Amino acid sequence: MTKGATVGFESSLPFAVYQQLQKICKAKHCRLVDAEHLIQQLRMIKSEWEINLMRKAAELTDKVFAELLRFIRAGRTEKEISRKITLLALALGCDELAFLPSSPPEWARRFRIMNRLTRNCSRESY
Image (cartoon, rainbow, N blue to C red; front, side, top):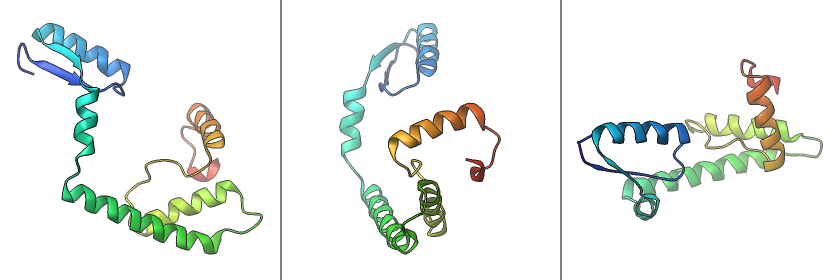
């Protein structure tokens, strides 16, 4: 970081990281500014590469849900369907999922419990 520079950050920055940036900026006589608006404007502009990735993700999602329709039936649990979505996505070439595929209230509850109580358990445990 150049001495006297202006450093922009976005509002989603974790507080601990923000505090570290403050310390670094103070030592380097830098100015720390909220750059949320600028970052959001830059994110609106997509390169051809990004657009192609978005198309590929949409195609993969379509394939996952086409396969999933054959799996879903009365009596299947949300947990089974969520696991199937994950396995299908990985099998079809997805590197990772951006979120856990389940309904928000159940997901939030499960995520809190999972983080607190089952840090070392396998996925099949919850």
